[in-house]
Each structure stands twice: as structure tokens, then as C-alpha cells.
Amino acid sequence: MLSEGSSFIKGLFLGSLFCLVMSTLVSYGPSWHPGQDSHLHHHIKAPSKEELQRLPEAQRLELSQRVRVYCAIMVQPKNLEHWTTAKDTWSKHCDRAVFYSPEGSATLEVVELQEQDEWARMRKALRHAYDHADDLHWFFLARPTTFAIIENLKYLVLDKEPGQPFYIGRVAKSGELEYVEYESGVVLSREALRRLTEALEDTERCPERGRALWRLNEEKQLAECLKYRGVFAENGEDTQGRGLFNSCSVGSLISESLARRPPNVLESCCSDMAVTFSGMTPNQMQVMMFGVYRLRPYGHAFHDSLMFLPPVGSEND
Image 1 (tube, helix red, strand yellow):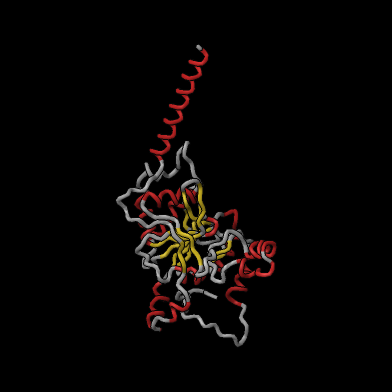
Image 2 (image 1 turned 45 degrees about the vertical axis):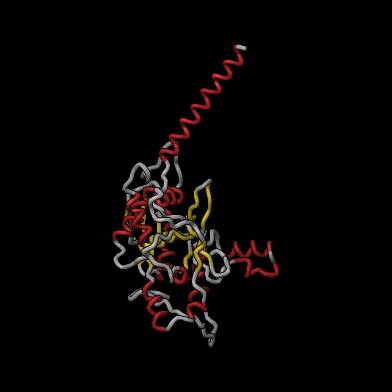
């Protein structure tokens, strides 16, 4: 009887301790205030070609000139080849491309963050981007191993208002948290970034270094801070529901498609309006640049409703 009583007391004590720990974690975790704007997760789709063709030509031109993108590319001095390749290829198509590094470089222009922690670097880079964006209202955060087709990104957000809180990419889920995978690239509207900069001021809800009992990697920390301000992850898709942000290279996607659906390799591989491919080597990025921007069948005219012109003075291919 005595041992049964001891077991009961021990169980009661352990149960109370568990509840105390869980309550502490919940109180430290960022949460969304019900009074804030509700912009719940859904699938973000680009406008269809038919919708665009119904618009007057003047309106299509105005739309194409309005969407301008600030690219924040996170680099490391030890990965100099990736850095220089990203600089020489796809980043030329950004309206402004800024490289952020934990330390300075003697050969390449960079914003020196003086931070080794990934989350602390991301916070500083996004705050810097917001403060120096001028009239650019869309932001693209990427690693140098990501290849981005900026024109397709512009097409995706063409009919979206940057004054609304958009947080777009390839959505994944961890427990109850939906977040955009950093490796596939992260798109933020100006309003989403504005709310993030406000959240970063709240060290209780959005701590700079995380907490010993509640430590998340940088992509989840970003999602938590945005969620606290009522901004939720949204999956970027084409009109057929295919994802536009890819977590691997084109070659890997084709190999997977061949193994899964040999008769429909291209259809099941990836969208022809894809925005990103990830995990690319410098050589693969050069090949992508050639295939996407330089290779053209002579005499073939593309009948797109819009044209995204390169930034003035850029070395755009």
C-alpha cells in the first residue's frame, strides 16, 4: 500500500512538472493577436494568361513596370564561387541585388553583418533591406545556391498588392507551424516586411538569439515572428496547382519524374513558370542561365502578354 502511495505521489509530481514546463514554453512562444488582420494561409496563384489578355495594353504595361524586386542574397566568404556565380547570373535580373555576409570581402561588394548566427544575420539583412528599399515593394530572400527566375516571380505577384502582408514560397509544416523553406527562396511584400521589423523590436515574442528550451532554425524563427504579427505562409503555385518554388535542381526533379511517371516526365516534373530551383552547383547555375535566358529558337516568337524590362543600367542578359 505504501509503495502504491509513493508511486501515486511520484506520478503526480512528474505530471505537475511537465505541465509547468509546457506552460513556460507556450508563454515564451510567439502568438498571433486575434485583433490583428487575418491573412490566413492559402495557395497563391499567378494570374492566367487569359486574364491578362483581357486587360487593355496600357494597363498591362503599367502592371509590368510596377512590380520591382529587391533581392537579398545571404552569402559566406568560404563559398566564394557560389557568390560570384549568383552575382554574374540570375541576380542581374533583380531590380536591386544586395549581398549580405557575416564578414567583409576584399573583392566583392557586400553588406557586412558581423554576425555568425544564421537567425541574427537574417534579421539584420531584412531590416537593412527594408530601410534601403526606396521604391521597391517586393523582397526576395535567397541563398547563393538558389537559382531564381525573377521575371516569373514578378508574374506571380503581378496582381498582388504589396500593401497586403504576403509571405510566399514553398510551404512546409512543423507541428502546427507552417513556414516557407529558406532553401527554395522567400518572398515578402513590403507590408509583411514592415510587420516583421516591428516584431523584431519585441524581444520577448521574437528573440534575437532564441531560447535554450525553445530554439528554432532561422526559417522557422522567421515564420514565428511573422505569425505573431498576423502574416502566414502561402504556397506559390501556377494555375494548375504546381509548385513554383523548388527545393532541388532541375536535374533532380527530372530524375524523380522519370522514376515516378515516365510517360509524362515534363508535366509531373515542374511548372514552366517555376520561380526557383535549389541546391545548385556553380556549373549548374551557368547552364540554367544559358537555357533560360540565352538559348532561343531562331524565328520563334513568344506571345506573352507582358514584358518585364531589365533594370536601367544593368548588365541584364
